[in-house]
Image (cartoon, rainbow, N blue to C red; front, side):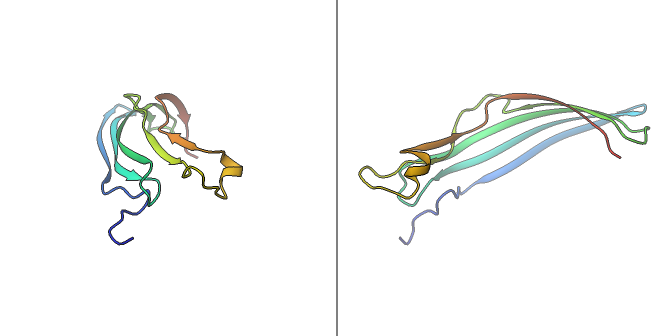
Length: 126
């Protein structure tokens, strides 16, 4: 209907990055703090299930050897630093109404933000 908010379309979404890089001899260090913001939205036009309305912080620490031809890099990242657990997507059928998706996913299905994770990555360019 006219004036209804479109499904899965928050009024506000943003990604903000604060980054600092400093060379130390043949090494380059970089630190980044990334904030991903998603405003409130709904999974469907009936506005039964609210999703979004969260902010996720991630931290990245990078050490790169710039004087070598294959440019090795070591990166430590912590995703969802504050371990926010919010609903990202969901499907919950109206009671008493059979839908085409119920055979596949059952009665309800929800997806949440990924929990805090720590990743150590070694990479090289060639």
